[in-house]
Image 1: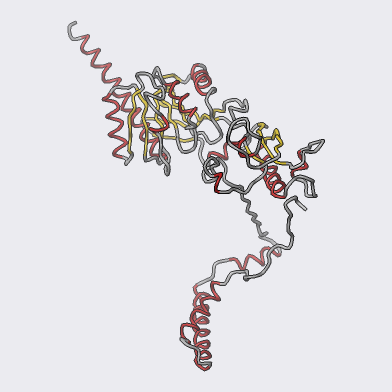
Image 2: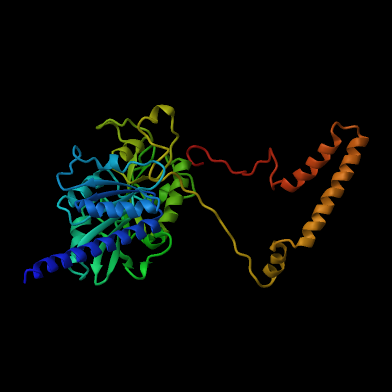
Length: 406
């Protein structure tokens, strides 16, 4: 009987130890999958487990910092933004979801806008995935946070011998959108990591579910009746600049593709003071976060760079590229013959022809008594290979726009 209690305690110790090793292996596999080189670990676990995890990540070439959240995690005790600061690469955020101050830490991260693509989060919970408690935990924990479409959050729950990961994001919490959850994948001690949601994450977040975004634009003379089509129609509209029309047309294309809509606000100026209660303009409304985007564009001067971030805004610019496919039948089949890679014989003939042209040009240059006739002949032939389909001084576009779209 005296040996029963020590055996039970030893068995419990082995069970906890094996569980900790499993979690450490799972975290290591996930960090390797995300190709992270820096990880911040916020935990209330034992120092032994933290050492085991740090050792495994270090062996994979990952630098890890540990911050304990046993006590208060306000900005004075633990500044999350300073801990997770990194300009060039992503920083993994590993969080123990069972700690008492987990939600306080998440709210601090939300205020500092750390739920973005540069901060992938992995939240470890001790909840069994029974589709009731786990769903309630995710809703209660994350629905109040400032998440957006670029959030990278994986919430982990135990399901038998494996761990399940749920992808959590929001198309716009500020706009009243509901929390979005999707099964990300599973991890098993034997089979390892199995990611179900593969590919570029924004392809899985294509449909915005008719989300309403706040858009601000500029009309110099406010019309008596406003209708959204006046911002993008091809004809001249008094007070609407050409750059506003072009931007609105591009945004309308995105709006149709991604299923969202705009609630417009009209301003009379592009640039305004960042001080509160100043005249409404595009820049200060975005600076105060009263608007989500601008359906126009503006010229930026150096004096505004102190408070207008044009280098690292949420969206820098919109670009379009057009491609076409050639049919494999009829005329397309004939044209495709000239798009196939050249054979070795063709390359050989091209090389011989280039040498012949170089020799002819060299002889002609020598007869004309040009200086350095050999170099002249070589670079003349070389330039013919590098020549592009344009010429300097040729006007590519005949149509011009005035500042008012005429």
